[in-house]
Length: 384
Ligand SMILES: *Cc1c(COP(=O)(O)O)cnc(C)c1O
Image (cartoon, rainbow, N blue to C red):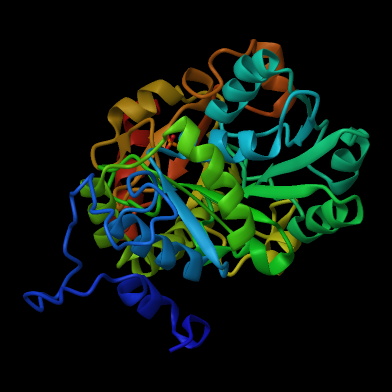
């Protein structure tokens, strides 16, 4: 049966299942062996990194969801991104990378690239021209993130893919915020898609993992670097990730629906001055988001009006947790100026629009009436 013909939730539930031939159990058996017989077996790869039975099979589910031939699972999102970058960049090469990126990716580039002699340019903005302006003769990779953290800016995926193709430069995307349920960058021409599987793939704030999906040829290239770096995931966690991914479609769709309702409500709220959500017509990139996403996702940010203290607001929330991570079934908030962007100066934060009033909101699966009531009571506690 071709995966292309299967529905999204069928792919989530069944593609990449390992059959339990011995006992006919309903779920994939977990193979914990880190050693396999070599007699009479054609061993092309050492079966430990990225290709144990559970890893190989779960990779098929990820590849099917991202419309690619192949995928690889890693020990974290950072292991996925660092291995992917190092597979395509060597001494003397140049990376063009979006200026608004996950903080860990920024740190990896700034702290590690100089040691390898790899050059990089952060774009001045997130329009296609900004990427084109940053390209040099030695550029080998363009990396984007959309929607990006924390203001949910949208990068034109097709324009970047075309830019890369016209100059024979590989393109990659961090698709963590959208997930393959809401965005399929391969269909728009991007070469490689990476995920922090710690987020929506895991979805229950109890797994740390990463993934890259691409053609067989590209995955082979990443595998060859991955076996040297060793950022492998334990098969126990691989098994948990498979279980989590069966509900990926259900969860992300429910979260996306909730986020849309919450964004509409927050936008009308007298004590909220601004909402950043690509599904709102007031978002500057609404049309672009609508053209390239299947849904607008479940991440947003909003600003409390000036008189309200954002720290006290979060302290007063009872149901919504203040949490450093995101994308779990439970709703969470953080203050970017106290966390992800705390190391920038006030002027630097002002320049990119991250105010002290800004709250990033990862919307979960709870009933929106309860989320609204929680926000309402937290606001009333800090209002005079
Ligand atoms: C969390 C995150 C990462 C890093 O993933 P880990 O699994 O925490 O290593 C990368 N990109 C984005 C957008 C993230 O949110």
